[in-house]
Length: 345
Image (tube, one colour):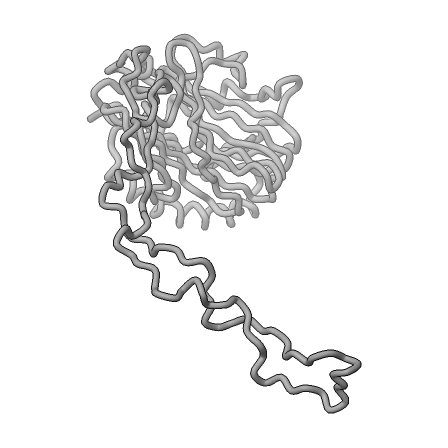
């Protein structure tokens, strides 16, 4: 990875990168949490992912990586044409839970902003490029708690439940002579062949054709059933195993933020990272900043890189890693990853 006025960027193929920074401790209790970052894939990624992680408790930054416990993991995962998923994984009582919805991420080579918003009522929103892509609740879109309602599997349809939408008209009367209408009649256009010899060929009879007046066996017409109650469905009941947790949305106090990258192709670029409790100013900030950063990105290719951090051995640790972690923590919002942290209402 390298750090410059534009952001953080990877340089080695088929590497696993991880970087973290210690930040002032904060809690999202009674506040709306906003996590946003930008990512740009300057080549066809083929297979890989780039995630933002929030961590509580102590984090050994020397051994930081994919196995480091986290409170929140958020970011895209792409592999070929099959996987284009945006991960949102939350931690609750020591276990991690992925979102159940299949949210598609962007796969082009442009910079995109991913935003996760978590509110005190346990509702959430996911924005991509400041447009809401998904919304819902921790209660329904993650399997964190047992469902509040379950189907009454022992329930049976009542004997008097009428689920026939239409019924035969009891007042319908079969027309007189209906049953005497033949299904076929002699073809009125048929003509006896000129060489027909009745002594040798027998009595000539015209061929039969379908009778246009024949409508098949008589059936009563259908009318709407006045006693129709709709299709019977198994009712929902309160789940006896459900126990509400009003603090479901509350994460353990966050002390560290991390970025984890796995890539087959190089040049994954992180530019803006924001963690805070306000959205209004944030929604205006990235697009304005993006235009400037895209221009700087073009200029950057012509400049000599001032700092380079190469992927290390094993799990892909970074040389120069601690310098970068300290750099981000000491100068938030100025240079480097443009790390924007706000712990104010």
